[in-house]
Amino acid sequence: MNAPPAFSALVSVLPLPGQNLLKHDHQLSSPLTSYLRLQEGLWLLDNDIDPYIGGSFHHSPLLLSLFSTIVPPLPIIWAVSDAIGAWALLHIWRARQGLPSQEVARSNVENLITSVYDLSAYFEYAPNAPHSYLLNPYLLLPSLALSTSTFENTLTLLALMFASQGKVSYALLAIAFAVHLTPSSILLLLPILMVLVSSPVSRLASPRPFHGNLKRIPFLFGEFTIYWLVLVGAACIITGGSWNWVRASWGASLTLPDLTPNPGLWWYFFTEMFDHFRPFFLMVFSVHLVIYILPICIKFQHDPLYAAFLLVGVLGTFKAYLTLADPGLFLSMIAIFPEVHGYLRHPIVTTLLHLHAALLLPLQHVLWVSEGRGNANFYYAASLVMGMAGGAGLVDACWAGMRIAVGDAKMWSEEKVDGDDGKGKVIWREVVQQ
Image 1 (cartoon, helix red, strand yellow):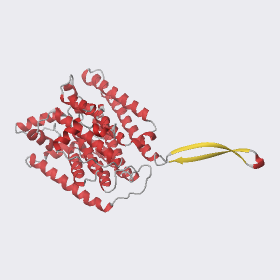
Image 2 (image 1 turned 120 degrees about the vertical axis):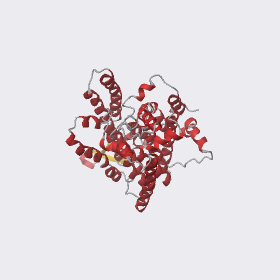
Image 3 (image 1 turned 120 degrees about the horizontal axis):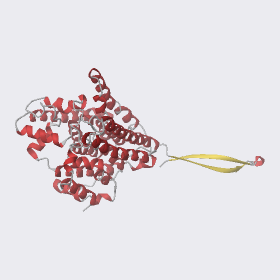
Image 4 (image 1 turned 45 degrees about the vertical axis):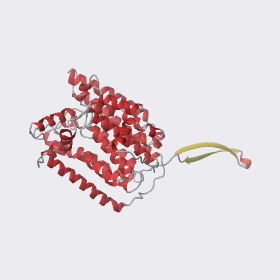
């Protein structure tokens, strides 16, 4: 049995001291991903009350239907989701390295068990990818808190995995599910389409114009739209033909009705905002997320998988209802791009910022919410440190992705004799591609 998957499954299933406190932690779950809100919605549904009329339930009807009719919301579901996410991350790494996919003639149940307990066969190729996901505290703690952000991360990785493997329908269906659960995942649609029509293999060291078949993209977008509309129809059927869920679920990311504190940058700004300015700045903050799509996809058109990685970093920094699971996915995905590690300019600074934020956020949260000895300014200051950490990592990843194309500049000197003029020093420069 491999240690990291077994450890993740064990801590996710066994009752741990203080685990109930994690479910109330605003850093690990938001109003859109909270397990307690999910339980409230299930209770309202069991009592024939529309969960979406009260303004406190913001989960998708698909999750409501899943946990009310198919499986109960047991911790093992989150453990399996984490294992699938690590398995998907591993296969993304294999596709990026150009390694052939291992087709094993086993049933789906056996493959699922393998993904949880027997990843050792793959570790000889990518020893860091599953570890970086399963042992990442930013991802492990939200999973212990039973935050539905775990499912969002898994769907994102599955979409990238299927796109890297060229499985069009599976990739589009996975990203359609992800967009349905959290509309901000629409940022990843364009790079996923670009991966589907090109290649996930690393091209950072040798950039060139986009070489995929652009004529396929409209058809792929049409297929995505069909899947998304089917999910919308299913959600409407689940809610009895009501459209209240649209405003309560999707609208929450755009209108920010619940200003519960979180590690993100939105909540405090709109707490202090005058009501007549609120619509304008909601538009500004929402558009701010969208404006990154085209510049990143154009700049890294030669490597759309890396563009998707950077957009995950954008979401992990500027998402409306941010939890630690969002920057955690970005930090875990860096393991599948080992070629840029040597070109990061300030990884120590980024690491220290994350460590600083990880210590300040719970401290200020306890001082403000539990002890009553602080105020919102202290907690928001810690949120700003988290924003700086996310921004520093994102900027560093952008720099490394561009710098690798230049290579290492090496310089040395050589003494040269020019006849009677004596010795003169000549400086030679060479750019070496890695």
